[in-house]
Length: 182
Image (tube, rainbow, N blue to C red; front, side, top):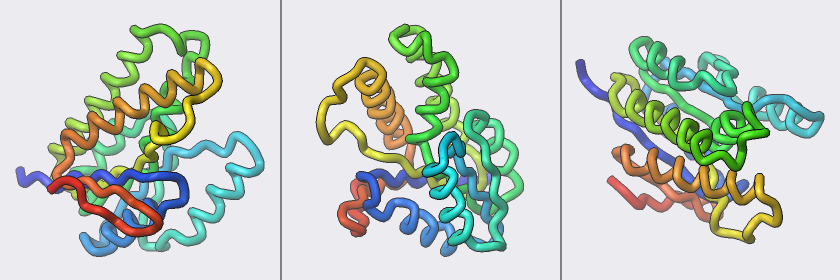
């Protein structure tokens, strides 16, 4: 079975990651699965999700899945030409907050990272082109609370796991993609 490419796009908030990922997805093929990990937990996020939906191509199939992303990639990776996961940032948050009372538990943190490793493996092996978007959250201020610091650390490690497995890695800076691997 032919393996697709795994592309990882990271950068700061509003740096153009999603737009760049969508442009790449358009170039790979017509059969695109868009995996959205955001959950409409408040009014502002509901509005953001609505805006993202409106700008997406209507030929793309959207799957809104906050947790079971690996399973979807495993299945859709055999059916679709392209899978765009937007984003690892929210997937990691969703995984972490499933057991909010265990946030400081290092075993729970390792379980989350194991899930990210499995996602990286599946994304690397499927025939579809897989594009994963994530934020770089560790380049700014140190969070002033435990949850924020644990999340920043786990996401940094999750990003490293995906970047290590990826064929190509891009860092978005002010809307400009900088290829840093591949």
